[in-house]
Length: 101
Image 1 (cartoon, one colour):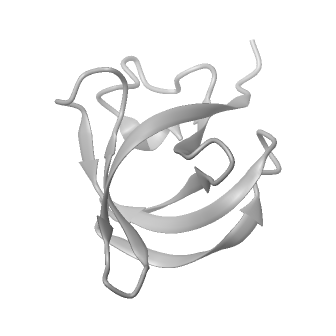
Image 2 (tube, rainbow, N blue to C red):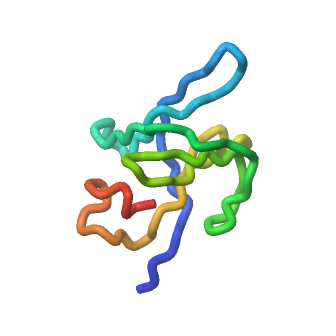
Image 3 (spheres, rainbow, N blue to C red):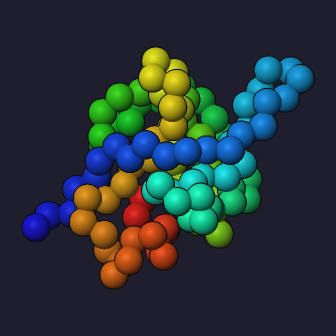
């Protein structure tokens, strides 16, 4: 089976600054709050299309554990998503987030 990307909606803990800026701090993967992945830094944010999975929004290029990842905020749906692999490349995708998206 081919390893395709799909849109995976995730919970995000974010900080709202006085100047109106929103900074994502933590991604919560799955339904359990214990699967948290802290965002080390936001490299940049800008409007962008999620070409691989469709849709558009605000792209946050983030660093998580030394890896660059793409986190999108869908302004129309008011929720975050990542480009996730349909077929996990790790035995347990929850334990290897870096192989999931």
